[in-house]
Image (cartoon, rainbow over all chains, first blue to last red; front, side, top):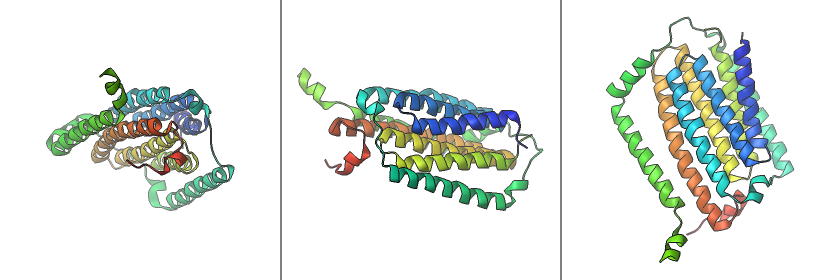
Length: 168
Length: 101
């Protein structure tokens, strides 16, 4: 059975995921998204994967959340609070969510996953580091190039051309 | 290990459902990006949970790659939103129907 810590983290994660989508202000919404991402990091710690949890905290809670906050700040004030949605579409969305959750939940509960539990020791994070350097180094280099390329692409996209013309 | 695999998988399904709801209902581009992030996190949680219960380092490695690629995706996505905001002065995706030139 799930223990109290697990229940607390899952309530935090799912609750703040709903809050991130439903809060009126985008700023509070992005702070609630930080709660979701932090809760997932907590799950990683519970799953004995401190390396992934650290990465999650550094990349998601640290950089992505700040990036989103800065983008929200660049948007006009009225748009941050404006909430435009079709009530009919909202009911359809809730129905779709329930169908997905119930169908996938029924399939999972019916499968053999329910009985899986483990007593084995967790994977040592030194092993992951070794794997990265021995087996996955080409993928690591490729990923570095993709990251550099995408950041450059983002900078080129978001560059303002009109300010340069004004200075001239 | 006091928790079972099924519990983590159920949390992940709940996150996936919330993400799908957000993607289908919200019209605010930034909120849709939130929904995408929630779905990506549900997938990563699944990867790490399965990797823990069939002890193998592959799942964690794949989750690390996935987190890094998600960072790139968010950077480009937010830049696109800023460009669209500058063109249309709005972040409602219903206004982005004619993204030409």
